[in-house]
Amino acid sequence: MREWRLVVWLSLAQMISWGTLFYGFAVVVGPMERELGWPKTELYGAVTLGLLVAGMSAPLVGAWIDRHGGFWPMTLGSIGGGLLLIAWSFVETPLALYVVWAAMGVVLACTLYDPGFAVVAANVTDWKRGILVMTFLGGLASTAFIPLAHWLIETWDWRMALIVLGAINLTVCVGIHGYWLPGTRAKGAAAEAAEANATGSPLGAAARKPAFWGLGVVYFAYNFASNVVTFHLIGLLGERGVDPEAIVLVWAIIGPAQVLGRLTLMGFARIDARVVGRYAMGALFVGLSILASGAEALWVLIAFAAIYGTGNGLMTIVKGTIGPDLLGPRGYATVNGALALPSNVARAVAPVAAAALWAVGGYSTVLAILLAGLAAGFAVFWLITIRK
Image 1 (cartoon, rainbow, N blue to C red):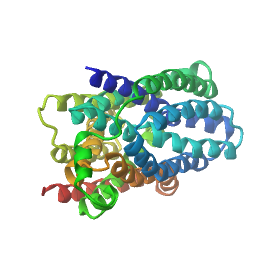
Image 2: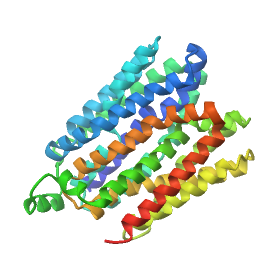
Image 3: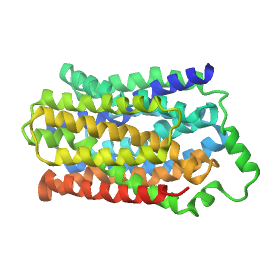
C-alpha cells in the first residue's frame, strides 16, 4: 500500500511541477511581451536556453539517481523551482530572464517525469502501472494550471501569478518530496540482478544498440512537435481569430484527452510499449493534420485537441516504459537521462525555431514541418519495435 501512496503523492507533485515550471511560460509570455515590449524570439530564447541546460543536466541527474536515489535532486529541484518562479516575477531586463531560465534548466532536469519515473521504477513492484498512474495525474497539469495561471493574470498580473505559482512549489512539492523520498531505493531488483551479471557502463551497453539511437530520433521528433504546440497554440489560434475563451477551452481539453488515453490503457493487463507507441505517434500525426487544415470551427479544434491529447498522453507512457524493453533494465535513470538529451534539445529549439519559421512563412509552414517530422518519427519507431 505504501508503494501506491508514494506513486499518488509523487504524481501530485509532477502535476504541479509541470503546470507551474513548464506550462506557465505559455500563459505568461503574452502579457510579458505586451508589458516589456521584447521581441517574441527574445522571450522564447530564454526557454530555449533553459531546456538546453535541462538536456545537458539530465544524464548527470540520472546517474546520481541510479547511485543515490531521487530525494536530493527532486527536493532541491522543487525548492529551486519555487524560488526561481518568484525571481522571474521581478525581471526587468532580458539578461535577468536568461539567468533565471538557465538555472531553471537544472530544476527541470531534477523535477519532471524522468526523475519521477526512475523513483517509481526502483520502488514499485508493478512499476509500469505506477508510471501509468503518474502520467495519468500528471496529464492534468495543463488542464489545471493553464486556466489557473490565466485567472491569476486576469485577477492581478503576470508578476503576481508567478509569485503564487512559486509559493505552490515551495509548499506542496517540497513537502511531498521531503516526506516521501527519504529511504526510497536507488535501483529495483531487476536492475540489481542485471548489474551483478554485466560489465561496463549501462549507458555504453545501451548505446551499442540501434534502438537507442532510434529512440533518440523519435523523441526529438515528438518533443519538437509537442513543444511547438505547447508554446505556440495560443498564438496560432489567436492569429486565426479564434475567441480567447475558445482557445482556453481547446487547451483545457488536451489534458483530459491525455488522461482518457491513459485511463483506457489501465484496462489492459499488460502494457506493450511497442504497440502503444505506434498508436501514439499515429494519433499525434492525425491531430496535427486537423490543426494544419486551417479550420476555425470550434468542434474541429476540439477534435484536434482530443486526438492530439490522446497521442501525447500515450507517448509519455512509452517514454517511461519502453527503455527496459528495448535496452535492458540496467541503469534506468542513467539511460533515460541520456535519452532526455535529444528530447530536451527538441524542446529547447522548438519554441524559437517555430517563432523564426512563423516570421518567414507563417504557421502553415511550421505545421508542415511538424507533420514531416512526425511521419519520419513514426517510421523509425516502427522499425525499431518490429523485432525483439
